[in-house]
Every structure is written in structure tokens, then in C-alpha cells.
Image (cartoon, rainbow, N blue to C red; front, side, top):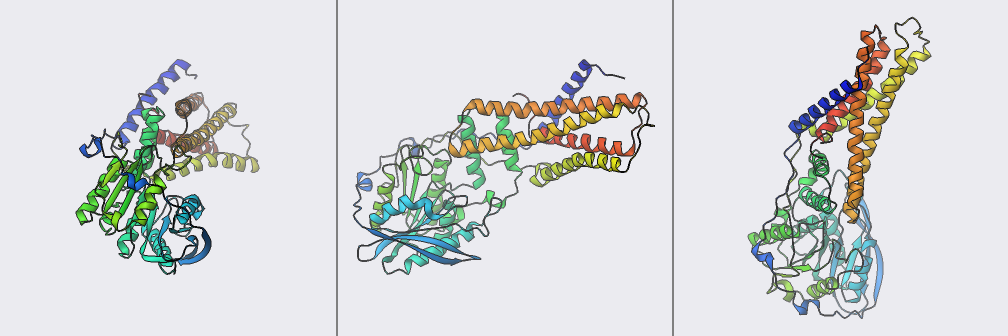
Length: 497
């Protein structure tokens, strides 16, 4: 019995609606950040005082030294750049942002500051106990304190003027270190999120998707994936550590930073310090600066290094500024909302289990057929034996389409992440990627419907599948059904576009 294409199309359409409904029912609450009301204190802030950005004399020659500092479970290499002028100097430890890297990324800043009379230390980030899935900010803070102690022991460093500098992820690390060591002279926070890592990443992602004019479904796909990630550090609350800072704080933000919700970050910082009684903070917004304090990824913002050097060298006078918040007026359009936690069926563990089961089904099909051929089973006596080759071709196409869908989704997510990190990309690429991902999901659904119809038609015509053929059918059809449900959960069948 053959089923017409029109009937198959209707069945596929009905199943698409069913999968869209199932995805809607199974999905977590929508991630839809609300517009951030303009706070009166940020509608118009005073300009940065000229004395803070005055030219810095950079006449000192400096020497570069490499040392090894024992840390927990490994030894870290550090590079010190120290002015050659006599006497004791202020000093600072660079604490890195996220990802692996070495202290070489701070070379330009470190040399500039060394010529200005400030000793700097930049060290390679640890590799033991830090990974994409797991990171301990307390362990990273311990590394920073070990480096600070190494600086304070130097004869050319004034221990009372040696402090910490942290950028991005370092904004969660430096407050822990400063709270643990009251002898740290100061804390500099550059592009510091001060909200949880998950809220920061979700805010940055939303900003980039708005810039790229991405469909709502793209945001749903990514935030549902984020909500199912079981990385504990993503929900880290940095406010308690901020409350523990007793030292003077300098916080610097760029008004063109697409990665940090700088208004809420500032409010979290000032609220925490005020609650703990620390009023020695200076917050400056630098016009046009990005996440790394550069202008469009090029040179540093003109006021960045002078502000940093003048503030450190003039301590303790600069500890309590008459203008706690100053600079360019920051504009944050949306709140840094938390990503809803996924239900148990959307957890990453369940996702990987589903993918593994589907993979087992796909792998079982060719393995079973190969075993049967090796054992020399004769199918000539099987009723309606001619039906199997055509059905087998359908199953192979289903498997390849499913693999293509998985590859397309991974490539699409990687594309969005790269666009977000590099602040690049264009909306046609996002629209095209989303179109490919959704079309492949639809093709996978249509192939499943036609394969089921072929099996049912063959059974009605008298075909009697052998046990190994039943195993092949169950593996491929069952694996594809699991992937279709997964695609439904992540919104690939959702309406509207």
C-alpha cells in the first residue's frame, strides 16, 4: 500500500505542530530581559576631573625579570617589569580574565606603567583546577595573593602601595583576594561584571543578538542550552566578596563594552561597598572604550592608562574622590536577567544521554547488518524481500541528515559565540545559519514520516522483517525520534520564525 505525498505532507505538518506544542510545554520560562529604567544617577554624570587624566611622566627605564612562583598543585611563571630609578615604588599584580593565557597579554600596559614608575607583575594562568567546565575563583584568588606577596618582598617595592588589578573574570577574583588580605593596598577592577557569570554572559549574548537582528528563536535555543549547563561557577554571587573589600577601589568601564552590563555592575559594586562601610571608591566611564579598554580593538582609550597611573601613584589622596562616579554617560538598554534553570529533562546530562542513545541506535544499524552478512544469512526466502533495500536507503539518509543537523547546530552556536566575542558578523549570516538549522530539522521530520509510512505499507503488503531488520528499524527510527524531541525542546519547530 502506498501513501500519497499529500497525505504524508499533512501528517508531517500535523507532527510539526505537535512537536512545536511539545517544545512549548516542555520549555523553561522564556528569557526576555526587560528594558532597564534609567537611574537618575546615570542620566547625566559629571565629566572626569582633568587632574586624573593629566599627562604622566614616563621617563624611567625598566628591567624585565622572570620568576617562578609556587602555587597550589603547580608552579606559575611570572614576569616583573620594574623601574630602574632608585627607591621603593608602587606595585600592581595583573589578574587575567576568562580563558587560558599567559602574562604576555599585559606587556604593553606593563611597560607603560613601568616607565611611569610602577612595578608590575603579570603571570601565566594556572592549568590545574581551571577549565571550561570548572573553575574555582577562590583558587585563582590564592594565585593572585601569592604573586602579591612576591612583589611585596622586593626591595624596590613599597609594600604599603602594592595592590591588585583584575579585568573581566578577574573582577570576581580580585575582590576575594582583597578581602582575604587586608595588606593589599588597593583593588583596580576593569570591566568587572559584579553580577553572576550566567547573567553577564546572557546579557552580552542578548546585546549581540539584538545587534545582529537575530530571530527570537535563536535566543531561545542558546538560553535553553545555557540554562541546562550544570557549571556551578556560572551562578557565582560575587556581592559577598565585594562587601569584604576594605581597600580603595578604582573601577573602570568602557561605554562601548558589549560584554558587561556596566550600569548594574556599578550599582552592585557601590551597593556592596556602601553596605560594608567602604566609601573609598572611584568609578570612571571612558568614552568609546571596549571590554579591554581599547578603541574598537585598537589602541587603548586615551584616558585609560593616565587615569590608572595617576590614581595609583597619588594614593592615599585619590582613595576618596569628591566625584565617586564620573566620565562619559553610560547607556544600558536591558536588564541583566538570569537565565531560567532548565527542568530536569533539559539538563545537559539528559541531553548527552539522548545523543548517546541516538548514536547507539545509528551505530547499531550498520553493525547489525554487517554481522548478519558475515554470518551468511540468506534472505531469499523472506516474503517481499525486495522492499528492504529501498527502506535501508531511507534509513541511511535519515542517519546522515541527523548527523548533519547536529553538526549544523554546533557550527551555528560556534558562529554566534565568535560573533559575540569578536563583536563582528552580520545579520545575513545569522539568518542563513538559522534557516539551515531549521530546514534540516524539518527534513529529518519528513524523512521519519516517509520511513514509517514505508514500513507500515510493507507490513500491510505481507513483508515480514527478520529480527535483525527489526533491530535496525528500532535503532534508526528510535534515535531519530529522540533527536526530534530534542529539537522540539530547543525550539527548532516553534512558531513564529
